[in-house]
Image 1 (cartoon, rainbow, N blue to C red):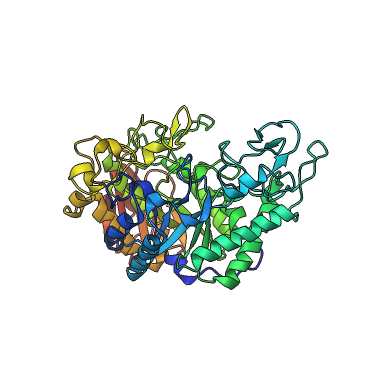
Image 2 (cartoon, rainbow, N blue to C red):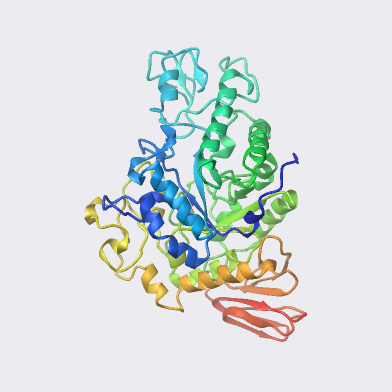
Length: 529
């Protein structure tokens, strides 16, 4: 592993909270969330115990892919407010002990970015990947005077920035090396972008599609070299900042230079099996290429924690003390926990797991109150990726109270960015704040317990005592965690359980060596000596 400066000390204690800016809070009544709306709701995050917020892209964009089609990296989108509004958000968050990360789209731009418009008219410009003749598979015809076609990274309107090819191919003479002028300019541009925002008080970046830079790159070795170069620069220029990757393969991404990587619904040799084996119940966002599976957090009791635990063991063993793995409840591209047949009563045990496992927890906005994934929404800003994969269902407005539009916006309902959950009993922050038995209060207590108990953080040891239903593990040698995500009662025998004192428990009984957990039961216990 390349030698990097150790991660900033604050990262080990991070509790991430992901905000989709369009949908969190609208301060000006136009139906779209904005920076001032987030600022007005920071007290909720501070009360919850969140330490670090990351925002989905908020740069200038035509928003054909919800901001992941950037047309100006150094300016914020007017829909979200001004640079001064963002600065105020960062300052007010800092007053509450909360850091703010931006989402950096490193591998491509919008096709209306000035860089691309210039490149489309200049055959000598190699900031993007061009085939000068014909239209090879996957390429898009040139929109300018330049002949040939360009390579997109995802949608056709997202031309791939040129970071070079790892291998030559005589059949594709347009391939350039990683040290050519265009790739060097793009690496310098990433430094400029990061330097700009970090200089304004931001604390780092979550990097979109971080594995996508160098093309035809077996093992991602050349892509890793790009990130290693950037990490060394960051260590010197901004040593307290962090880089989180959307890579989904911590064993590769962290040695490449990232401080942390997420387990995601894709990535690595198993295409995201670790995360999907926990949460994915066959509804919500479903890639038809995925093999069907019974996830562990399902009332059927047919799943297993082992795919996740095995992946975590491999990754954490490869990382050692050099970086972190983050476990999200959901994200803007993946189903919420409360999805399909999963009900609210099944959510507490999921949070009891996520907030006691030795990964950095990432709470997707609204999951702390059990917001639902909404099916059958219209395609919104590129949300539909397949016949069973509509990301809009995870991007609906935050539900704050029982007022108009659930407190998200004063705009007419038909002007909201996305429709609200129409259920008359949809969960809200206000209602759950008033109910100490609510999911929101449980999540807050679990976050506080984790903060007060280093053994429950990423540095504490973990020993699996029973793999199945119930799932039982020991943290730091003295904190017993019992989880039963199935609807039926489950039991096992665990030797050496003495003097167990419940710290947070519902439906779990310890009697000598016998452990019994009711359906959807969970418990965290402190053991004697």
